[in-house]
Length: 249
View 1 (tube, rainbow, N blue to C red):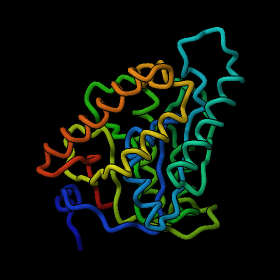
View 2 (view 1 turned 60 degrees about the vertical axis):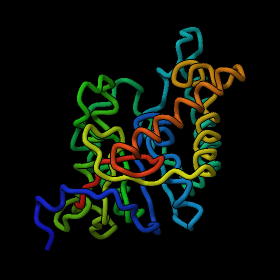
View 3 (view 1 turned 45 degrees about the vertical axis):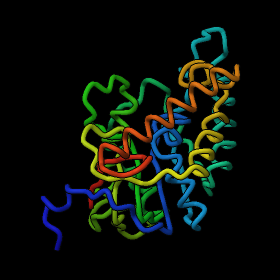
View 4 (view 1 turned 180 degrees about the horizontal axis):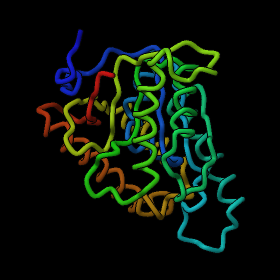
């Protein structure tokens, strides 16, 4: 049996391509930023990928004149396009109000039920312990997702569930303070990640420096993202990579 100490020590060695993957992102585009290239590669190898988006994205614009219902619809459409590009097989929207997501036992159990239904080999989500992470939705999503992994694996939890307990083999946390696991980013998977991110046109100004609006801005965004992967992988002694904190649940 793996002891607690070993379970908290990751490895730069990439995981074998899993059969089933589940991601929990606070907003549309969070998953693509955190793990888009990794998910694209696994999907190409046949993984069934479920993306669960916890909030409605209704705060995701600097234009206060856009009606909330219109922005929500736009962001769900963009997420569907991005999921298609990245190779996801299912997108779940839980539609909590953007910016108002709060941890609760009910939220934990809702995510645990999704884990039991989809039975992922790997769960990916935000690192809830990331220092100075100001966005409350990111913190709440990561905490609820990790607690849900524990609830989903315990056979005496969720007594009303129609699905049996399930324990993923690994949890990967993106934007981790102390990453210890690397998944390589090839040129092809990098291009897929960029294409998926650019599907989120409503976020061009807020998160991508206007990459959808001008060629120069797009080149700058792509160069910045490529440099990020090179630095992240280099810190763990490998090539361009998406890096994570790996936990064995």
